[in-house]
Length: 156
Length: 254
Image (tube, rainbow over all chains, first blue to last red; front, top):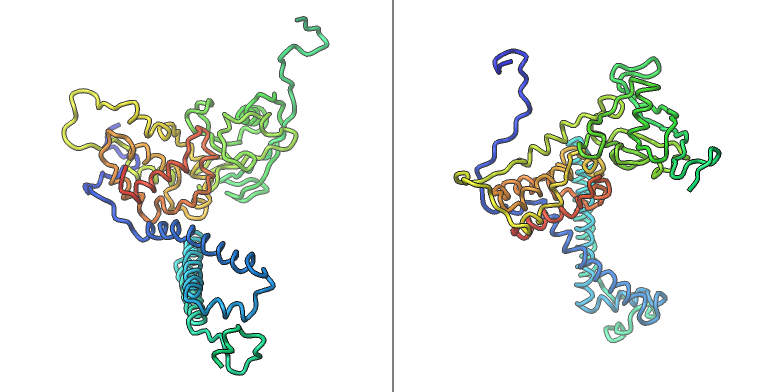
């Protein structure tokens, strides 16, 4: 049988080697992977310390009330700590959800819809959470004094 | 040592009845089932504990139902034709002994997942081979060919020794949960195939292959589920190989 006869069926073609060499630039997927690898351990440290400070030191779980939170957020360290925890947790979790959507949503419109909803949720929660952290008033004007942190007496 | 007629001979393997539950389908359909519809069918075969699942399948095909379709070629774990899902794990039927599977219960045999089923235990391997072709599985060099062989030290060879063992049975790729849901993913086998060349000191196409694997459907889809490493009948550390490719991509060093 020759190549020109009608019965000849060529095998599947192997791609020609690309004549392009040099370094491979990190693409979006690689950055996403790196972000997950870096934010993961940071989140573990942030969250475990957060839980330790809140639950294991002082009076334990019973100490947590408005005054305790207000006292913590009076310090810039805890404001930044909680902001970092919020932003990293939302971005880390949101990126994980993005990968899940890529895996399971096969129709383009559904994928777009879910990605959009996810983006709105992630950004919305980060913005709302940041607003609470940065514009928090530890001493509301007409609140019961016994519920407020001790330093509010000086403010009044 | 004396063996009497009553007691079984020393070392004799007891015969037993084994039930196989096979997920079948016929492209032409049967009286009860539509074309391509998958259905379970049970067979009982007399077998020894030291027989393999492949022997039991042969007994069914040769003695009970000649229409049972499955691939096998060498029957000794080298050709990689008879990968199938046995008791919910991808294995080679020719390397799986019945005694290792609890023969008291029915042994469940299904086609490997994630590839289109053609008939019974036979799947269309073309998407799998297409991924393999994509990573250019051939020696790529520059300059003129040397007059003698391309030399390599034992250490250089050791670098990619593990991934040369691949027999392309597709057990790893079809055990990957990412591949099940996203057929665009190259799958573990293609990355193993690329690893074999990327870390070969004689090859010069590393960055071309790494560029392919850096793609959306490439190594970044891997979630290190380790299903592939468990499934590999050749004992290749597949997830480790994938991680080495990721490492080469993130550090820029091979």
